[in-house]
Image (cartoon, rainbow, N blue to C red; front, side, top):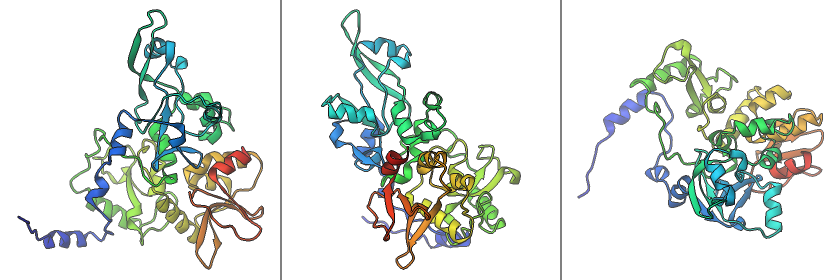
Length: 363
């Protein structure tokens, strides 16, 4: 028997809020089999099955990390907390993986999106020759960090510090705009649902009060209200004191501390930067470029700045007729860099590079 429900009264209340409806489907909230496997024990894969997306690890369009469960005769030391003894996990197509692939050293790799930093491991005890299994932390590969210049690890020679403080969730968030599928959240953190019952009205009031401008970058989002958030400065979602609330565009919001899981689709990042550019928010100076450019490009920008280049144009319109944009452009040098997985056709005299190509050339 089919049941019919009249939601007219509910929609009338929604209309009073003066907010833009967001597309919604139950399908979008359903984790696929691949996502469930990746976020759990992981999937055993061959290196040939790993996609190269902007130099990063991809599997079926998802960003993943790769590790080797077999720790050999060092398993006991690793399980006892000697992280240095363990084999490193990888997040990029670094020189180590390329060398192993070239030498046909195909070990058993597991692809995963698990962000806990704890991995299921196996090995043979050095003294008893008995197989041991368990879970332990592993370090990230420093070659991966340096290839990406993640958090300026290579430019500032701080790869060890970045390694010791590496946060997988934060890393995935940084590069989320490079991938067609966003990481799936399979758990809810304590406090995630602790908003006040009248939060929607509070949020609307705050955003109206600032005329739908981001209070950090000043971009006007009146035409795209879903991209203007209200941020709790102290992180306590029930503290709605006006001094604790700040209207931020989604791009500025995800840059706030402890917002590592605010993944952002590429189209949203590009839209915000397009609006910033149209409204005169974007300027060609290095501090502003590093603040507003897609976080996925920050490693490359660190290399370029160190080389003495001028700051680039962010979200540069290289074809006015077709309204085509590229993520970064150095107009004097006629060089552009794109995060797109699809090749772009540059204008005459220009060269366009993917992020991976640019990292390889300018590192």
